[in-house]
Length: 344
Image (cartoon, rainbow, N blue to C red):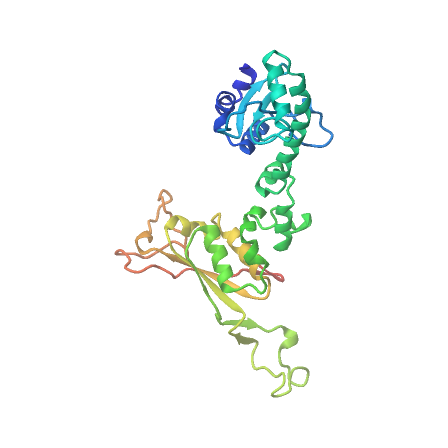
């Protein structure tokens, strides 16, 4: 065994010593990862001597106990993988068995010319067989960075162009791909939003629909006597606000522990991802707020010191507590901050 290969890692050393313990496809993948300086097998425009391995037929007439019979290094330091399940020669070979017998007989006398010649075709056939298997395995193509499946999923959720990515929402865009089936369904349901948020943050979630709110009327929509919007029963409105009971919902998160509670606060690392995911799924049609439900046993006492492990934040974590809470606390409701034409 050559030190240059045995030192790659213990797993590759095991491949060389006990190849019969490895499934063929996984063995080739391990060689590709370990020998990155060489080219993958079966690619067009790549010479066989540049590839990570050479595939050979087995001349054994015994019942094959494994897919891979042997892995050894040839004179050019290239791993030679002898396989049992396909090729030109052998019990499962494409050629008539007489050719396998002839090649085996000549090999016993040190003449491997016929065997080596036919293995030229074996190597190419096995290489293309591996490439065909790899082509329809999205996880394998993802490792190589050339898969189309990820792009298709991005298209389903509305992020198919590079201009809409990367990191536009402050989270890893690929983190949304597991929910492509839910996001692609329109219109989005409360159950879909609940499942996405609950799974992404690993917290209990409840969606409370039809939460009423007062909506400020723009100056152009207000009633002005003798000027505009002054037809009774048509467009006249008393006041500068109207009550809307159908364009807002509340996302209740919890009960959760204090660590996760802090993460969802505006100063926490989960606050922006939460807001961005909700906006991405729901769109701009609906308003929302978030209610955090803290476990009763996790409610901290307020300690007025900067050295406190759980230093109080007024309005968020400054609880007036004289005895342990008996019920989960759900006082905190995080409102939508409204900027010019945008909800944050």
